Length: 586
Image (tube, rainbow, N blue to C red):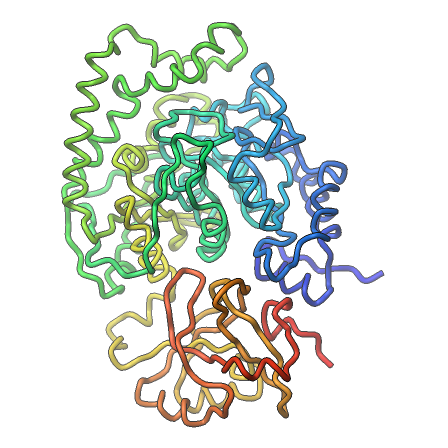
């Protein structure tokens, strides 16, 4: 039997290519994930870990799905244990609260319909009441890279499952930063959509009017594909709404804090140095920068847990706490009971709501066509330090995240240069709810190699070209790209709207044809070349191939190789392989 060499972490591209080529099957992948979960059992990642018995119905169901039309066919994902999955208990981190849902949460149902496989239920700060990952009776979830450090919460297990290669992506929730802090502390992308754009049906509420379901992934492309699958209002969810996404577009300006950012914890100096490096990268993006007063966002953040708005948590969970004394951990119960303080009466609540409305108006004016950039976290802590001072340390972790949902912002947390050995650092991009396309484009620009945007290059005389076949690295026509002074930039994926065929030429070439409906993603390479050489490339391409606009996974468009539709009549359909590299070698 051939031994499969699994990568350290699982990605959508690797799995789709491996499935298409027959190197692995979903069942084999699930066995490997179960092995990894058992190896990492002491890290307290799972409350209900994956088992072959629980996964069997999903594996059997794949036979009825077409891999080409099911964009997440066979892709394993983890689910935070405050989100319902049929057949698995929902505990919210509290055994006495546990119940057995009769249907999937709306987001889980949409993912399963797209072919994704829910693995199990991940650990969390009980009732989603923390940002540290240590507030669980099921054990403290260890950081994926340094076990002595916190993993971040409350979506601790979801983030660590992805970072440890036990899932391609995972679902978390985010009220005050729980979908972003764990991403930053474990070197991941954390995408927090606009409030209501992903349905909350089947999610245990923390603050129902502010809660969001979020995704952790290794890449922005993977996170955006999940967003594409689950986005949209749900008729059974009173909190959901249609939040249309425009085509990805760079923001008109980037907002940075004019005040010095405060850092905390045992690695404060390292975090500050990493922030300064990130600022230099931001300055290379060739987007105008405006330095703004961060006090607006800090004041809004204070309203969340420093005033009567915290009563919403008690409204959602207070009845259970009163009826089950001692069921919650001491820290969780104290956090929840702050919502029942007598000074938080109806009048104080309305005063806070009115103040928040003022802040929202100011934020809308400040962030019109703009993106705010801040450190996702100003530091981190050891688990021992959090144990000694559970409230202050937790509060610090939300310093640059708490304002987000209160002000009706979307956000994406992305990795930046590390603060030290096995010490990730990341930034978050914020925009108004209707401007998710701005954080997508801004994050993509930041994640690309920053040097190419620097003083030694000029964007006006360069063009990005998407290639999908013999012009890729290692293939015969790579030398043509190099002769035209083209430079490989990065791997990418098309939007899920293409058919890929193998043209009967000598040598054989792929043809990528955009579909009016349906289609799949195709693995690409993005190259940058002098605009002056672009004409020579175009003139060298024989029919039925040509250069047109290729839509990428993030919604942006670049010039790239396309094929005329008539060529498909005499060509082999190879869409299921997901890319030219995945085609079996003859």
